[in-house]
Image (cartoon, rainbow, N blue to C red; front, top):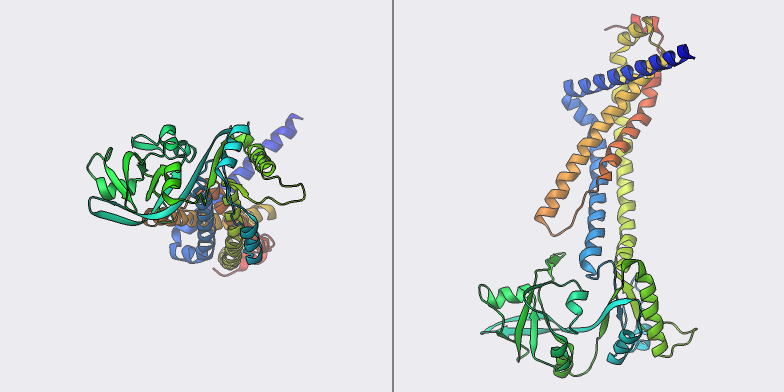
Length: 425
């Protein structure tokens, strides 16, 4: 038993030594033949760079959509009159437009009173308008009519002053909570609190400024003014375009909270079991799911391109390894005459091929990382490189090297030692 264990230990040590020797030879070959190695690995490098760059783009966009585009957080959702997700169908859209009534204030009050799985729910509506102050004006500003809790629900932080209060909403007061762009346009270097802005000629007192939200795809999210929703209705009349913004008691109860709100609104509208919803409830995951559906096409195209590059790169590696086997024919003959087995020769060239391809994969990962950093720095396109992509890039390229190295390695292992020693140098 002890003898068998010693034999196994010796075989493991021999295999480890053989593996290290093959790796050393492969790295030494890369170092001595830099240009040849680069041209050999060009296909692998391009394939890995493409794969990792696309992965970084999709991963970054998924995070971006979840964190910024929806602006609802992991536990938030919205109830709107109508919204469209998926493939465009004009017929269904116009049917929805005809069937779905506007969200009403009494419906908001009913859900707020009856819901048990909501941490909070608010009401808001919006339009674009001209905002002016001290002779300056800005067109196309988003004016939101809100209940007092909307900034907290939508994760808008107060940077200066305060938000709109419940009493100001109830009393239709002419106060405004402004975005960072409006602050920079009218009050840069000044204290804006207590100052007056006009929205389409109507004066509002500034009570607070929001912290900067940044931009989405280059579109600023700070070009807004929030006013009490009752002041909004008083100014603009018809109560159109109301949407409800809600937060579940926690992320685990998000689906149940959406279902509860849906049931409450259906019951208030007296919809029967066979009738479809005449409103839309959606959460952040809706945007993420939609984006993931769109990225399937991008991913499929990337896989096609990567496959072509990988095959081309693998064929080049196979040809180079065949040339290496030819160059080392006498060396193989000497090794076999000194007792090297076919398995040893096979392992050496397989490992050398895998290390060669793995080096190409590592260069590809590094190139993709530089591209991701450059794109993220100089454009508004988000790119995020997941840690797993390094293992994927290097692992995949090494597997390609192993696969395309099988034929040269088998050819080397099958060489007759006598014939190999006769080969010319």
